[in-house]
Length: 533
Image (cartoon, rainbow, N blue to C red):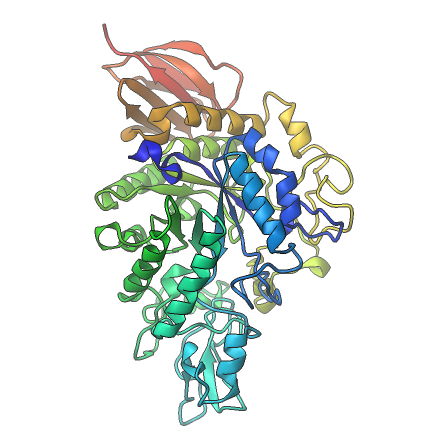
C-alpha cells in the first residue's frame, strides 16, 4: 500500500557530499560532516538522503569514476564512518540512498587495468574494445558526452575502448554475464550494510547497439551547443535490451526488504516510462526530470503534468525533480520569487519529490572565477557555459566567513551573499524560503491527500496552473501563479468555500475563502476545500 511504502510518501533530499559539511578542515565535505547535520534534515522534515558517489576514485569526474565499488574514498572517511552514518540516520528515522555508477569505472579500477593488459586477458571482454577502421579512424562516430570522440586508442594492445564520458571512464560491457554478476555483488555489499536503495547513474546508457552502428546526425543541432548534441544517440543509449539488465538489478534489490531502485534517465516521457519495466519489474522510480527541462509557464507545465500522468503504466508511481548536481539551480532558472512557487509545485504534485541541497535556502547561480573551475566538462568545452560547479558549491550554514561549512579553504566558493543566504539566518525568518519549504514539508507529512492522494487538474487561467489533491474526504486545491501579474480564479463550483492553508508569501494563510481567490504576482496558494451544503 502506498501509505506504508516510504519511498512513495517520503521526500528524498540529495546531498553532494563534497559540499554538505566538512568535518576535518580540508575544505571538502565528508561522511562525518553529514552525520553532524542529520538533525537539520530531521528538522527540515525529509524522509531520505541520497548521497552522490563516495567510492574510492581518482576524482577525474568527482567520484563518477569509480576505482572500487566496495569501499569509501579516504577523502570522505572510511567504512566505519559510513556504518556510523547508516546507524545514526536510521536512529533518527532517515533512510539512506547511495549513488551507484554501473555504466563505467575509472581507468584505474583493477578490472580495467587487467582488461587493458592484453587482448587475451580474462577481463578483456569486461569492457568495450573495438578495432579502428582501416583508415585509422575510430570504430564509429560516437561522441563523448563531455565532448570529443568516445573512443581512445590503446597503443599497447592496438584497439580502442569506448567511454561515454571522459577517457578516464571506460564503459563496462554489460553483455558479459561476469560483469553483471560482479555488479550485483557490489549492490549486495551495500544492501547488507543497511543501505535503503540506490540511485543508478545514467541507467539508460548501460546497453549499446550490438553492431556499433554510427549515430545519425541531429538536423536540429545549433552551433554553440554541446558537441554531444551534434548526433542523435540512437545506437549508443536507450537500447531495448537495457530493460533486462535493469530487471536483473531489481531482482537483487528485491532480495532485501523495503528497498528502492531509482534510475537516472534523461529521455522524453514516452520513453522514460518504459523504465518502470514490464509488470513494473524495472526501476521503482525512473527519475522524471521534465520540470528541469520544460519552459516555465502555466500551459507548458500543465501539459507536461497531464502527459506524464497519462503515460504512467498501471501501478507506476510518479516522481518529480526540480534540481540536481548536473543542472542549474531552480532559483537561477526562474528567479527568487518563482523559486518559491516551484517549491510548492514540487511538494504538492502527486508522486515522490526529490529536493537538492541548498535549494531550500534559495541558492541560485554561484559565480566561479576561472582559476577556481573544477568541472571537467567546462574544461573540455570552455566558453559554452556547461560548467556544473555553480550548482555544486558548499552549503551555507551561517554567516561566518567560512559559512559554517569548513575551517579551511572551501573547494568551491560560497555565494557572495552567504552572510544572509544561510540556514541559521533563514531559519529565524518567518517569511524565508527555508520556512516555506519546512511548512510545505510538514503539510505533506500530515496530509494523506498530498502524500498519496489522487491528482485532478482544475484549470489554466493565464499564467495560473491549478489542480486538486484528494484522499478520502480530504480535498485540497493548489493554485500557482507562474506569471508576474495578479490573477483571480474561481474555486470549484461543487466546493466554493475553503480555507487558505498556506501561501508562498507566508503572510495571509489560515484565512477563509469564498467563491474565488486572488493570487498576487508570483504567488502560490494551498487551499482546503469544503463542499456545498
